[in-house]
Image 1: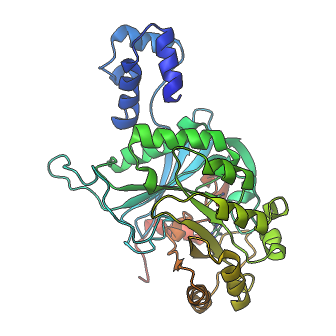
Image 2 (image 1 turned 135 degrees about the vertical axis):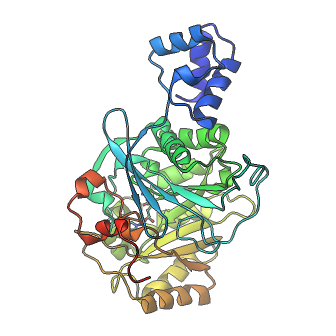
Length: 385
Ligand code: SAH
C-alpha cells in the first residue's frame, strides 16, 4: 500500500493524516513485523486496521547463500508462495565495484555516516540488487532468469519489501549507512512500470534511500524509457546494450525486433540527464560472439556524443547457457577500443558467481536444485584464492 492509499484508508476510518505517517515510519524505518508492535498507534486503530485486512512486515527470507566474496543471495518468499532472489553486495571496492552502481562516485549525501548506535560504525558503501518480477518475459539468450518465463509482476510493496528484509537481516539502515540500490535482479522493471515507479518513490520517501543511489536497468523497452524521462522521482538509467548491430542484438535479445538499436539509442539521446548524471550501457561480453574489435568499433560509433559510460560484463556462465566467457585479454582489448574511442568503459567485476548470484544468474533456487558444483562451494573456504 502506498502513502496516498494509506492516507485514504485512514481518512475513511476518521483518523488524522499523521496516523498514516506513523504507520509508514514504523513499517519502513523501524521495520516492525506486526501491527501489534506499532505502539504509536492506538490499540483500537490497530484492531480496525487488522479487521480491514492490513498486515505489515517484510517478506520472509526462505534461504540465504553466502559467497566467498561476501555477496549474499537471498531467496525471498511472498504471501502467495512465489519467490524471487535479492542480492546483497557489501562494501564496494570504490572502483567499478561489480555491483552495477556508479564507479568512483562517492560524494557524501547529507545524513550519511551520521552517528550510529554506540559500538557500531557506519558501514562503507553496499549495494542491494532487487527483483521486479517473478521470472522474466524478455528471453535474452544468455540469461538464466529468462529460462523461467514470467510468472507475475511484483507489487510495489513486494519490491520495497525485499529491501526491508535485507536491511533488517544485515542490521543496516539508510541514510546512516550508505546503501546503493540497483533494479537489476530478476525481471524487466519497465514491463512492471507502475509498480516499479511506485516502489522507487516509497524507497526515497519512506525507506530513506537517496534518489541518486538508485539505478534501474532495462533491456530496452523504448516507450517506457520515454515515460521514465518525465518522472519526478527517478533512479538513474542503465540500458542493456549487449550487441553492436541489429542482426546480432536480435539474435541475443529478441526484444530488439520490436525496438531496434536506432530507436533505443534515440531514446537515450533524448533522455534528460541531471547534473553529474550519465547513462550507463551494459554490455555482456560473449566469447567470440560479440567481443571482436569490430564490435567495439561499432559501439563507439553507436554511442558517439552521448553522455554515457559502458559497463562491460564478461559472461557469467550457467547451465543451458550456450555461450562462453571471453578471456581476460579479449575483455581488455574491447575496453581499450572503447576508451580510445572516447567512451569511458569499465569492467564489472563478477560478484557472487560461486553462489549463482552474479548478473544473469538469478533463477529461483528451488528450480535450480540440480545446479552443478559451484553452488556447493559456498560452504567450504575459497580454495585457490
Ligand atoms: N531486465 C533488466 C534488468 C536485469 S539487469 C535488463 O535486462 O537490463 C541484469 C544485467 O545482467 C543486464 O545488463 C544483462 O544484460 C546482464 N546479464 C544477463 N545475463 C548475464 C550473464 N549470463 N552474464 C553476465 N551478465 C548477464
